[in-house]
Length: 79
Image (cartoon, rainbow, N blue to C red; front, side, top):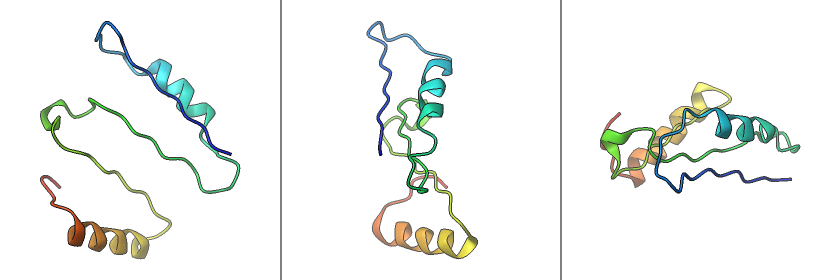
């Protein structure tokens, strides 16, 4: 069970986030217990040429392991 939601303004107008938040809320639990992932563009306009990655984990060990992997394989611009 998976879902996709997207929102693009053809007029290039800023949105306050309510419409996309409603769509994301409907996909909060995929049914398999693994949660959901989200992608957004434009939330950090000062870093428009970079990717932002936000992680959540079950415990600090999982987050530390993920952090070590990211540092080993990616160039960190801002932390």
